[in-house]
Length: 383
Ligand SMILES: [Fe+2]
Ligand SMILES: [Fe+2]
Image (cartoon, rainbow, N blue to C red; front, top):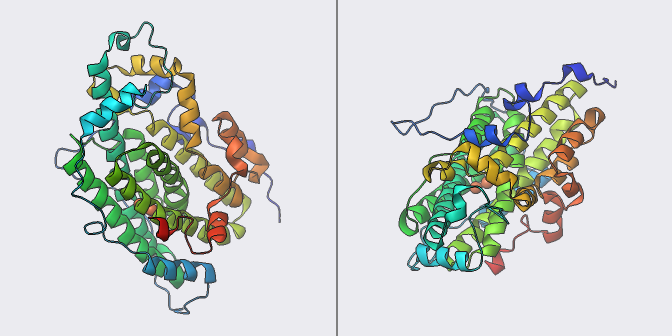
């Protein structure tokens, strides 16, 4: 039975993302992450843990294949990376500045802002802060993945998925470990979790529907992370970080594939209203992931107000292009899951408004895997 969509059942932007206007820069820059004094953050987990008594291994062959690949692809963050490498963060920040690099900005017009007077010293500091912030957010996102994957082990009803998710728990622990160590030993400080990222992680953990963990974490957060790691991997000349990212990316590609493979089966059986809810969640996650790229905490630490940061963003038209590239994995994966065009193409319209729809025909992650035919698009041989 086809259930027709009714636009009045749709939640508004205010209900979904907490503001009316999706591109309201002042609102986006005003949300600055805060860390609790006791260094802990508790979130209610509303999902039911589910046992299965069907132990048939390989009932889902693609998941079984991923599990077998994951077992053979484990690495040790302590012994497989050259931690003895000397890293001079300030020198690297100088080099970035000399090549015209200005943190996360592309081609900003600084007229009428306090950055107009910035010289080499200020820009080098900005580049250093930007790196500390970026790697900190990678670390916090990895902890989110660790928690979510442990949750999937509990909640997914299939034994092949429980097995695979258990390998991902170890992967994510290793990722938190290596980003944390890099920050501690090779960088000059760390940042609290970004406000937008934190809202999304909380929503994913809180949701009572087990497939939302997959959609929020494996497809959206990890899809963006894979693109962001790949971007940093291409840009950084620092050999330890390059190798660290290469190793992490090899794992992440499996993780995104795990989400898409699992959800493809679930979504075939959902009703139209249930699919609409998944579209809305995907949209919320996409907006939060895009908004987190603004680097609010860096501006705050440098004493730049949200109003001025928003003005800078508006005067940096190419910066938006950079953020959209990070959706190159998310949009095709949403398309593969049928989320773009279901319910009168609601998510297609939303992704068009966000300027990311052009990525819909990029290769999706399961296809990349098939091409590599080894469970991962990144070859272990060239690590
Ligand atoms: Fe990870
Ligand atoms: Fe992951």
